[in-house]
Amino acid sequence: MSVLSQNERMRIEDDALEASLTKTLVTVFSIIFIEFLIMGISLGVMPVYVHDTLKFSNIIVGLVIGIQYLATLLTRHSAGKMADTMGGKKSVVRGIFLSAISGIFCLISYWISATTLLSLSSLIIGRILLGIGESYLVIGIFAWGFALVGSKNVGKVMVWNGMGMYGGMACGAPLGIWLTSAFSLPIAFMGIIIFPLISYLAMLFLKAVPLPVNVSRLPFYKAVNLVWESGAGLALASIGFGGIASFITLFFIQHSWQGAPFALTAFGAGYIVMRLFFAHFPDKFGGARVAMVSLIIEIAGQLLIWKAPNAFAGIAGACLTGIGMSLVFPSFGIIAVKKVTAENRGMAMAAYNAFFDLGMGLTAPVAGLVAGAGNYNNIYLLGAIAALMSAGLAYAEYRKTQATKAQLA
Image 1 (cartoon, one colour):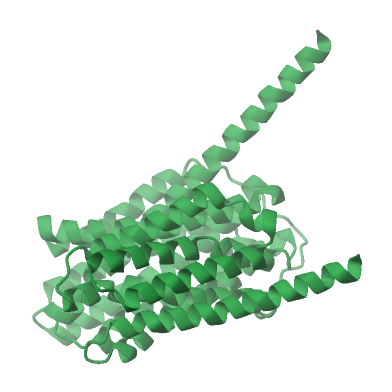
Image 2 (cartoon, helix red, strand yellow; image 1 turned 180 degrees about the vertical axis):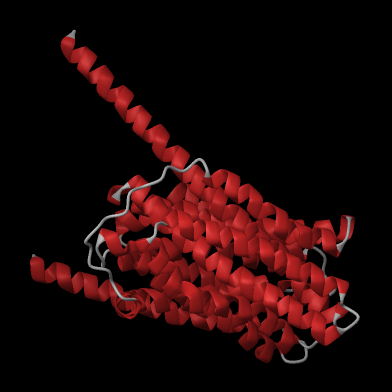
């Protein structure tokens, strides 16, 4: 009986730990989901607002979209430093506050839209604030999540964060378009102000964690040096998503197709389904190998959009892109995180995510140049070429891993 009682106690303890882990991961997911939901709302309405209402060119559309990611990129260092030295909670709170403020500047832009240059300036300030807010929130929640779940579950934090990122973005775009059509554009911008408050309430469910003392902190430039190969692979892979997020609405309008919001939804659906059922693949088969296969699927999706004869094909291509991109982030990410100590994972993730920001930040303006006066399909050929280059980096990492295994054998 004593043996049975001990086994029963162990089972109860395991169940309690699993329940605590699930609660933490769901809360982390919720906070990230809401942050990227407001980014999706912005992306759903911003290109048409800048292009059709304010009457600016595709290049300006790309610059307005891309400047957010530039702001995120330039603040990754300070976000990583704050998360590692002051704690993830403080970083998350700062991110929530700045994200909400960004919505106010979007509203101001609408109210003064008759003065187009001032309106554009206000919009750009809002985009910059949203980029900085996203930087602090994402790195803070990564560092906080890693500390809460322990080193054995780092991959799960990446998976749930990734689902929140792309799931929120995919839901946000159609939500923004629906709010604009059913109500008005200011209501969509109001969502950018209100939703971060829900993130703050969700954050209250996470436990505080003590900060380690007397720990050697990794400088940002050294973190970049350690993760640059993985980061470059992620940056190139993200170009495909950047093209969909920034220009799919104008691409569909050019062809007189309906259903542009569903392209982002299809991307998110493909992305999340892969994460739900195949999230263990990078751990099981190795990050480099999974990244290679994933990127081949992304290439197929981008080429399908490039040559899409109708809206259905465009949506299907976006879905394939989502399926392909889904495991790229954790695959390259696991390789990156293993190169630093546990106490410096916040800085490592800051450096790694900076490459995603670089890819997204460059995609919008470069895609605007590639599109020119309206050749939006060329953006997706660019995405396919970039994904092919990313696959080359994954293959190089795979060869390196195989060579290391051969030396140890």
